[in-house]
Length: 116
Image (cartoon, rainbow, N blue to C red; front, side, top):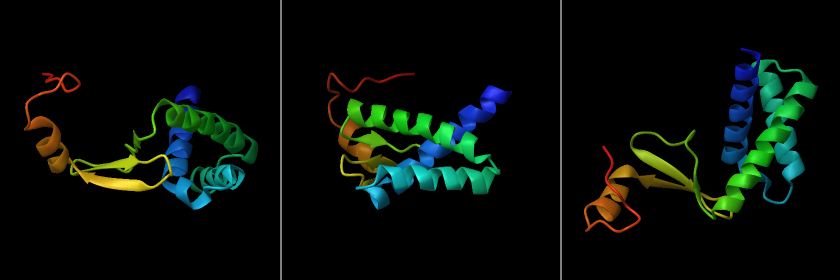
């Protein structure tokens, strides 16, 4: 149970940093501080706990950015719109219908596979 709580806190911190990263492009320290305050205020987390969790979430954020120039922000996406974050931190709302039309209604390419 305890680990689930910290995992959820880490996911919240990661989601927060993904949503607000563009506001802090030149100061990751302020982004992390803001995420820690968010956890403290929204979950009543202890400051040391919040900072530790934010540190892990920040490492996860950096790993995601190194894997790809673009990535999906699942916490901001829904069944109609996928939010894609660019390498500059800019969010792009892409309608799912446009993705389907562009990627699926054309002949399938090697990188797009139908799954059941």
